[in-house]
Length: 580
Image 1: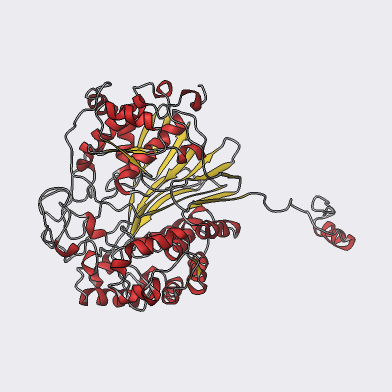
Image 2 (image 1 turned 180 degrees about the vertical axis):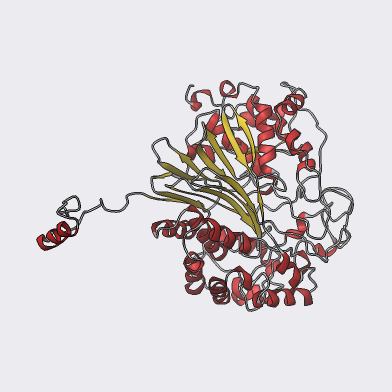
């Protein structure tokens, strides 16, 4: 295959550099979280330990994106080859009903809006959290290190403080109008009534104490213990639907991944209620019949095909974005090659077509992701969130906990697949993917970005498989997105390319970025791992190389020690020290 730049319709230059190492790799959305992950692996832990430590640290240093009172999903490949999905997504409280909110409109764009934005901001927006339970269960089942060790970096950064990045400072400023309405969260993020500035020290003493309680008592302190009672009582009196019994009864779900193939590469992803795995495979199936390698990266013809397939997937998404415990999801049909051939026949190469469109998504873009691997073969790609920036934009007094606003993802109109129901899991575009060739992993990736996640993850697969990009190029390459309305093209595509796509009938809009920062790892045949993070967020890869000293090596050879070892091994000298 020719180098992709010789066939490209658009050029770009990677802004960040990748990291290659052999003993462990962590790519997260903050350098302190990546450092926490590396610290765990350097301490004898595996990729699961590293992931849990990174996620707890992110709740401190990236509080606008993720928290213990949120939800998420992890795709895990264990060293023995098993692949599982741990669903820790949030659920609707038991007292929530299909008509709990009053919608302001039956039509887009205000279809999901409710009176007073009760499903977006404040206590009524809070769903039952799954993050803390999922993280602790995964660590107990598959990790090596005690929970107290995994939480130590997060506790340290909460208690001592950390320097606020420009990214976090911007998020605080952008949401200050809501944060100011809650005295508890305002006291931390808006000291003196003004948003924290980049370079400030953010200390979270109450949250540090909450983390200490969890480190000592485990997740039960929230799911049925004193902390849970405190949180539930506060939320109840504030008007929330959440009750203490919801925390007591919450359960994670272990699911089988969804699987497909694209040009000989097996794609493994999360199943419903996550839509990303299904629709990534569906889109790849449709594109597989086209010679995309010859079409080239970023050409008008290539972008046209991608946009048309995205529109078809959006039209089908309503059937595959619901809790399978409540809705019959036609997953097998959607990922079949035959169904892809049927839908592919509707695509016109010379013009854009209008496809029947399902319910649009209002998922938040404000999510985090980690991709972590160790030298033993354990791989975790996991997306976690409290939904919108700073979740419900309140803080539980005395705890430092920022709860989610996941109730925003339920359809406030009764009678639909996504309508509210007690115990129903939220749906998500999470697309944590692992790609394999001949049964061996060749890449793992994921990113935040709500309903733009599957499109972006899918394009990264195309970049790797079709265009032969490096992992760094694959995560940083310009992206496109559509659900059937506007066609979003990042400004990284040349204006002339955007004009030609528009001439095919796509309502093109130039975007600064589509979806969020991607975390990816490429796996080499020699055991090397290359971590890559893109320019769209503070993402940082860190790896571990080197290793322990060769067995029997000592700095100074003491003749008496050599003699003693010989005596203890019946004169054998294979353990004799060698001078360093």
